[in-house]
Image 1: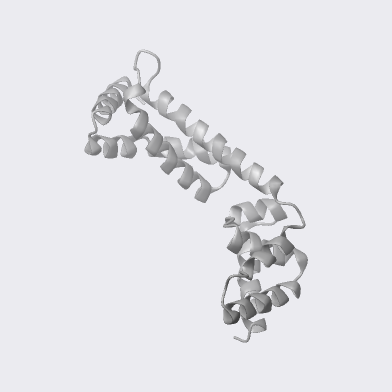
Image 2 (image 1 turned 120 degrees about the vertical axis):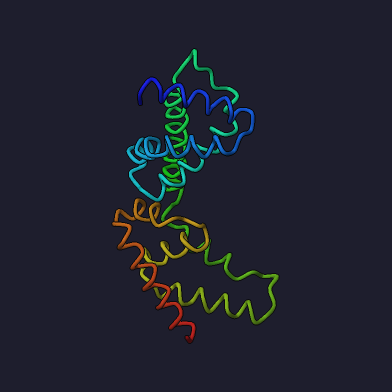
Length: 184
């Protein structure tokens, strides 16, 4: 970015520190491409990078008053924040994936049938557990991680060492099998 561009970013940062939302929009327009590229290199996934960029700009908004042009340029300061967000996100994802053991599906299936639920819901839960038991172990674990634990397709792809598109297809087919098993 040119020297004039850096001066503009410094001015925008001062305005943002004062709560100026319009300046924040301009800052985003001028810098989001660079931050997205930085984060994407760290995370590898476009979807994860989009989430991280959003988080980075939230932090930039909240910490704008901490920016000091005598210490760093605005883009260097923002890139540092973006890198930290991306690294934090990558670390959380790795911890989440490594924390998931191979024997998680039985525990999750037990939680599907709530003992405090009414009889009809309890029967549906045990029917679901029966249908899950009929699935291949990897598919069952994938379904449970996705729909009980909220794992993203990217996290599942990493956990099962498969492409994201394959994970999407396997989840869709697994849900169709569950629907058929449960009687449509």
